[in-house]
Amino acid sequence: MEQHKFVVCINNKGYESSLEFGKIYQAIEDKEAEAEGLIRIIDESGEDYGYSLERFHAVALPQTLENVLRAA
Image (cartoon, rainbow, N blue to C red):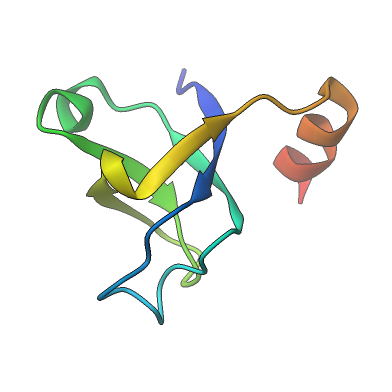
């Protein structure tokens, strides 16, 4: 089963239509992508795509908020 976490976009240059600076995104764990310096993000299109890990910062959210965001 895929693991999910949340990250904040800290650099959307070149991807302004796909990523919003400062927005919290759901990431999908992908060891192969991470080995290549990428992270899979469910972006503004509603689909998941690989982006450079350097564009995001992982955040810890309260469990209640995580549950609400995952259900959305």
